[in-house]
Length: 68
Image (tube, rainbow, N blue to C red; front, side):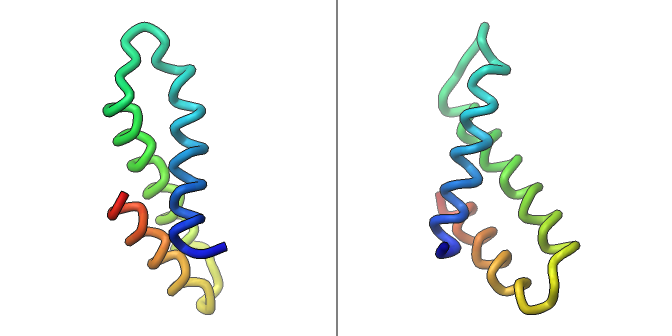
């Protein structure tokens, strides 16, 4: 999976979960930004625990999340 595909997958997963937490005041733009922040937290955790050979990949994923 490319870094861009992984970034999109992570954000989509976070967005899907977040939709059901905000039933009353659902705002798609806010949910999208919150999903990006959650995905960045997940990537940071991967960066702290991954083997050295995967660091570049996760850094690229993080950059792709920032672009979206």
